[in-house]
Length: 333
Image (tube, rainbow, N blue to C red):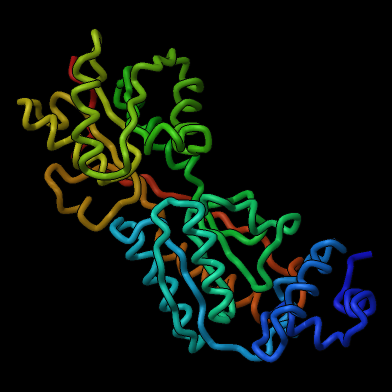
């Protein structure tokens, strides 16, 4: 049977209310008592229910949001979705960025807990295993965005989105399709790369590892990737980019070298940022339903805060949409 607060209280020789307050870092409990009870809880294998709101002395009507990168415009609409859903339930949102640093991510989450937030949303977590029951360090609900392996998550099917856009390029006659990734350290868990490779395999197109070039998710990374592709003995005819920012960098770099998109190269992005519809040429991309993603994440978190049982909440997956615009065209004969 799971270890309960009463079991810990019996072992520690204190009241259940003292255990509850110690686990919730209540200011009226001595630091020595808190540390002793928290150590005992961990040793006994206590896994707190993120929904057991009795652990919280009172609510603050606030949620913390840790996002990957404040400079990335992808997160603007996601945050709008979170804030609208939170405001509808009279919750305030506190925002912080961890810049893809797992240590900073954990520090922000710890800070949110110390500030007694009612729950936390984390986008693109670099350390999702820290929030799983086996390694639970936090006594409050946590929802992850775009981490589908986590039990309380809302994600876009990035594999499907990548497969759709690569298949679109294949249907246009392209066979040498390059991919500019987010970066070498993200390759092992890149669902977009998996979707790219699967689409090639499904259409019996031989994979050429030289066609995968590392970017950084920014315009500069797209610009820097282009010379590597142009140095190949056999050029690609299409480029599938990690995101729209990368695609804009690629188009700019190709234009500076005298190439035209899509006459000489088709270029596709991912995210469908607002600028994608107004850039020239307008950008073929994958719409991630970002506002909906934020709304669903906030609603899931609010549900976790209010209900009695994690089994009532399941991971959610949002299907992406292929958006075809001017930057892709049939391969030149």
